[in-house]
Picture 1 (tube, helix red, strand yellow):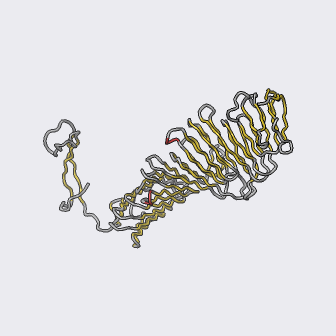
Picture 2 (spheres, rainbow, N blue to C red):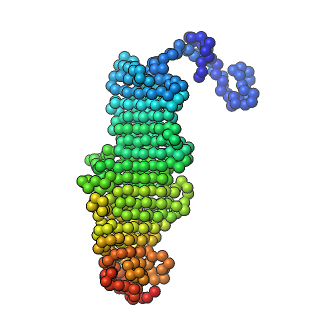
Picture 3 (cartoon, rainbow, N blue to C red):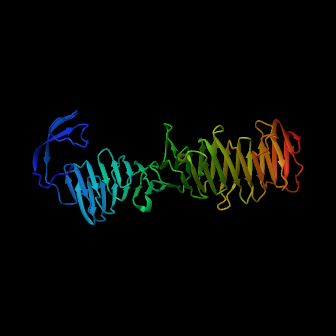
Length: 453
């Protein structure tokens, strides 16, 4: 409520009218008739305001910005709150002054506000472009009209960061996160917090980057949600306690970076569940994987890049998602273990000699290139009826779901030297007319019937 400059100080009477006719062309007055509503008379106490930018008003600490680019830092410790406003410091003891709220209004200019809370209690942090609210059991901080907002908390805090309508960029790491608007129009940061949740719901081509740690990390993706955390510790009550936990909703452009470290005691694991109707393509090698989801709603599309994960597991629902995969092995020894529903390529990464595993479940078709090295294949039939054929290039072996369904191979294997196929008590067919036994060694187990294409 704006107070007129000529208002008299003290207690005055006011009349308030609430009616559905308030926004009509003939605006209602505080007197006269109305179709509906209510009229109330209330007292209002007008006090002298402060001309200072930082002052106490009752139990509220008020910080007012200017038309310039202000820089404000607020630090809360047990017993006091220290404010540094454009280089000038003011300290407020919370033992002699009961402060329940801090209000910061940047007003104009490209302002920067940093709030640090060293009191060990849970803080809920809500950030949106130019605004933030930090709430705990003993204090509420409201920041508005500020371009650059930073919050520094503790391991109990939970942060919720909301996007703008433009193209925002988000980077999350262990206990830290940054959201930048287009052209850095706004920058929101959190640091030393336990959990960060970010949302891309207001439009724009938002980009998300998740960064791992020197310890083992785990990444998960399902529908339009991704998360990344440390492995955690299972407590006696069965709950898992994490050092950090980051989660994001609605982002269609996501990059996830694990930290390659041969001294890690456990491995970095990425798990992807594909449940969205449409087509999903996976392209992966020992160091990088890319998942592209298409032929679906725009908000359900996905362009996901995974870097330096030891284990990648992609699972599709058979009835909804058509999953195709293209896997490439290392220059060393790789092993492919497969069935009609699962493909698992393992070996060692050339950069750090750490083990890698790429597993695909319920795929529509899969191409696996063993690369260099003495690579092996072990396939066990599930339903049976497969047809195996060696292609004319003498280095490619294709496995079809049946002899009558040879438009697209279920599994294509390139540059593998040793291959073993087990019919598993089923009847299957094989065409070895193009085999070069000097290049490929094929071991057929079970009931395989020679049948040329």
